Amino acid sequence: MVANANDDQLLPPSVPHLSYSQANKYLTCPEQYRLYYLERLRPTQEAASLVFGNLIHQALAALFQEGADPVKFFQDAWDCTEERDLRFAFREKRETLRERGTLLLEKFVSEEIPKLGTVHDSEKEFTLTLTNLDLPFVGYVDLVADVDGKRTVIDFKTSGSSYEDHEALLSDQLTAYQCAEPFAEQSALVVFVKTKEPKIEWHWSTRTGAQLREYLEKLGLIAQEIHDRRFYKRPGQHCAWCDFLAVCTGDRKRAEETLRRV
Image 1 (tube, rainbow, N blue to C red):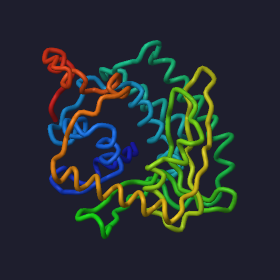
Image 2 (image 1 turned 135 degrees about the vertical axis):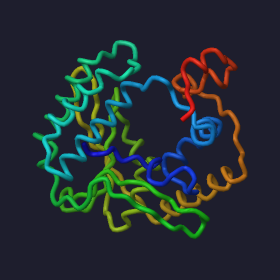
Image 3 (image 1 turned 90 degrees about the horizontal axis):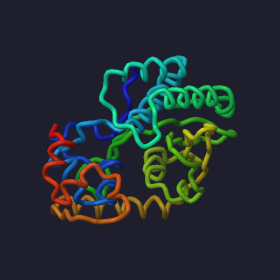
């Protein structure tokens, strides 16, 4: 089985580094970053939606790296989750997610693959040495391929609803990809929307040199904040689906029931 590319797994925790995932988690909430990366707390139950998204990624990697049938890959991998204790959201069902993953990947093969020209890389690992960081910036690019004759960096997403166009325009992840692929002419979020009528959306963007520099400056600020151990709670709507809400609200019993240390 193709491993799912996860920039948190590129280097062991003992090796200092920064990734898009780390930076994004810190920006969402510095306390969430601390509990995840320093305290190494994880939910005892995996969220079914996250497992679903990971398996879609793995199926696409198997397609582009090995020429495997992504539909069969996903179905087999999803069936193997029967023994895992997954946490399903309201109205989410195991069989429904299997059906929608199947339909999405069939749709991708029949309608989206023909849009791609030469595929240059899949799950491409990168390590950047940046002048404003004292540690490497690491990550994976989901796909680098020609689309309409243009070298394109692509980030695959799964979602329960449609994306807005501004999400690609402002995506830090696409900016990070563009830093790793400076000769790419454009970037795209390819969103697998797992609604009742599954659909696949392309959201396009480009990055200027000024935008790349702005992101690198932001990474430098985040790295300094982490180095100085500036961790604090940043309340917001994200708290409602944060795995660590019980910790922040002082609900020790629920925290012990729902979290484990890895």
